Image (cartoon, rainbow, N blue to C red; front, top):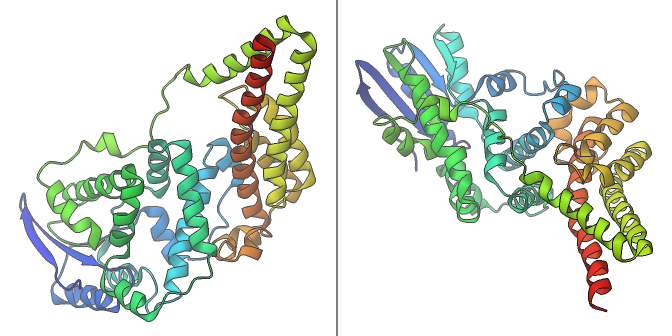
Length: 387
């Protein structure tokens, strides 16, 4: 059970950490009692600027510009953010205390008493981009399916499990299991943020501060203050290095088809047809499975055979853009994304969410199709050479 604060001095600054469970009334009480026990210069919360805004305006997704999301290639990050947030909200529905109530209590206290309230966490989009860059394609797919299953699963949380969640940091428990499956997750989601948040606290001009954090961060932050990671190493999205490796598969496929032509022109034409049909059909199927607009389905079919031959293109970008143009999401769709994604039925009716689903599924199925089509081309070539 979490019931104690941690106070230490560092370079003349007095810092009090309040480790909390995100679904515990005890944690809310601990935050309130600690804040009222003395006068602090500033209150730090385990939120970034975006999440602090979302806490104050919980339904405000209306400011999201989907076209800008496409241009920045952040569709996957936005969708995962929505999925993870909705997973937490689903858990919160089983509990007496809203998820993040202790953070809200700290924000409200700071506002009432005119104390500086400072979001100390790293931008959530940067964290998600760093998570994605650390995972393989299969690991991304596995993580996504696990989260989606958890959201749409009808399994009920029994009373003993609920009480357990109230007494511990839910993130700590979740990451213990997740880090066994995906070791890179813990470093990006916990370790780097431990250092980032301690950087924020230590670099502030305030001398007597309090920080409300999830209990999973307490040990790492105490350790981080002794030797901080360089801030520039953990504060930005990963820079994609220019590489030619992405061209190897496309060049190999074109080479295989060209070689097939030299052996048997008809087989060469058949290989081209297989490539077009398998890629186009699979990407269109992925789009259709999430009830994409007919224009998006057609666009996925046309784009996939071409985009699969270039690491600079993706079928989902074109299919998603077609879905965006055809369906014309309204502000209401953007506003309801956070709630609608919790419902299997509404998640695929919301026009804004549909754009994200179409983009993701067209890309996933196009990637699968590339390997299926390549295998078929290799099989054709093999039969020509050895039969």
